[in-house]
Length: 45
Image (cartoon, rainbow, N blue to C red; front, side):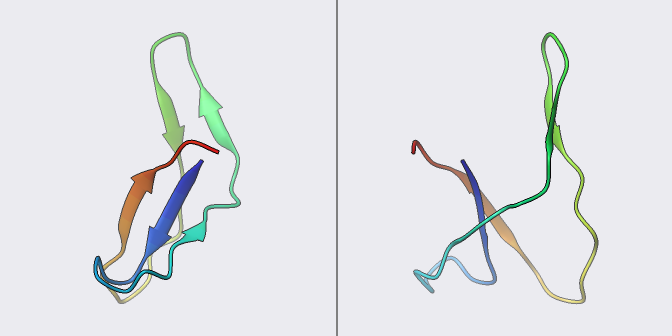
């Protein structure tokens, strides 16, 4: 599961709902840009 937050210390992580594209060796997610910093993490379900 990929999650994002606007700050590392917020504790309010939201799941990324866009489709994850899988190639044999690469996982990628395409996101729209916003005018704020975003932090991402991978989390086991």
